Length: 369
Image (cartoon, rainbow, N blue to C red; front, top):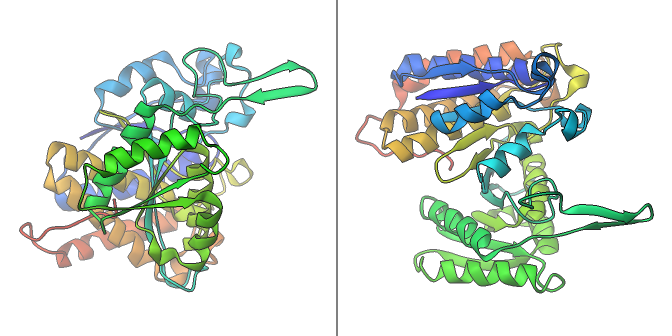
């Protein structure tokens, strides 16, 4: 498996380096034949090439097996006309990475919840209120005069149908329940269309339960009754907000893995930002990107029917859980004293003994997604 590595800005290079260390440890244990190709994006490529997303990077992505994308400081970029493209949004738009998959699982000693959480949020990634990616040309947000600003919400039958399919397929590998989150009592046309398509897809999955819930109630029930959720499917902005909430409730935004999926392309990306205030200090928590990389391996493994890649994903998840269970091995944001490098080394060390104790090839193993 060939992985294109785009370290990004701020803490991106540090947590990307930590993630590569863990991937190499898993590769050494399972012989997955991982290969890595590094390219610069963000502020580094802006200085050298005049753009935050060079054309050779865009040309390479469809030819590679997966992409590992570090966080970017897009708020610090110049205007688009001066080379300041947001790599995250641009990749989602150009390659139709329509599904953002974000698992959230509570861990003892870290969660804020009284009841266990083990869910996945499947967020539509190319439409909705996100003005930087919901139009073919131009922006979905505009100002007719200095005192009036307008934003368009785009919801299509195609977009709703394909994100619903992704959610129901995922639910079949989990506990067979999908909750469609909406605001159709107010956004009657757009969320009405979204629900119409979700219900159609639900008819093709009689073995999966469909629940429908208004976004306000969902935000409350994630706190009160997180155990009721398995797979949540929703539109872009609702999914963005709810997944951040769920990650924080389960322990920290820094603990949530995330992938962006299209039909043939997968980009693994941390849920959090580039944290430039701690860049270069060896303090950043690399867990989110490590778990995102594990999700990338699991996706590729399922796609190529490569059991070793799927086993590597499970192995990395188990190693992360093992390290997080020891408070002294956690990074400072989780109340521990470990540095970025300390954490990566601890996870890497845990991989081989965990691998030795894992089930044999004949026993089914499942990553969280």
